[in-house]
Image (cartoon, rainbow, N blue to C red):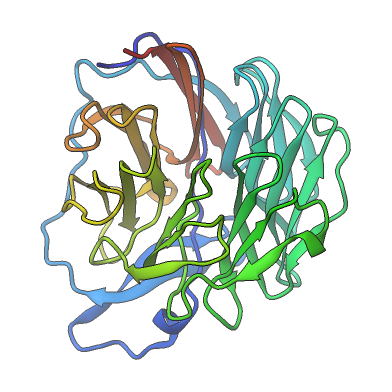
Length: 390
């Protein structure tokens, strides 16, 4: 079933990521080309998130027409001069958005209006945010001048913040997620001299000493911004390689990426049903989704293969969900909808923005979803839809 009635959605775009590790330095094999997922950061000196992969000889993909029965997504707000990479709602009314140039935005009316509560400017970039309650929120990102990856906490709704809690002095921090007040996981998007690191805490992470750094895959490279972290501490992340942790990020098992090119966003609704997405902006502009119904033991082929990259995946149930994405430089993007667990998809909304961050809040059968992204004018948009689940 579809969700009914629109309300609000926050749109945020995904940024270009950096390629590191063996995949970045290896000599190009014969017949391979350099596939580029994105450039990061958007505002500043960009780096490629890319990999050498076999030539994709598939014909150019389209995006199709919006489904006549599409869910009624509504544009809630435009955040001028903001490149948002992550959003998190503490309640249906109170939400936060993390953006480049040290910006954090807050809404107290469900996303209709946003106030900038932090603006540190360059060289600070925030790529992750999670609200644990109306007053407790954490942001994650990096300092582009010294390659420190760090986080900050606020316990008064963003009025004041802790000083930087540095997780690495040799890379860039990406998103952060907690599954309870103690267990948190942050994934890096760049390490200067090694494959990307993961950082985990089991006691809340209030101090740098509370975090432990591990390398999920010594032979790997970058991961997409969205990773899965379930309440049972099972984590999945994918990019150049696909990696699983069953103990909150302390130890990982890795293998090849699910897609033959590479992956990006990873979402599991439980230990059985999961999805990975991906996409490239060169040599083709294309995006894709794969699904598993057995916890990742086996994966489908591409169940969605379209003309712009997939940046974010969100499922409300094992059956009902969206794959969002786009390319800000081409002013294309939007949300694809599935009601059968990602086996088939239909275009739900075309936003003209690179949609790269989503969140949802559920109260009984009532649910509201927000998605955020940014366009070629480097303004972020916020979209929403709300309704009733079966």
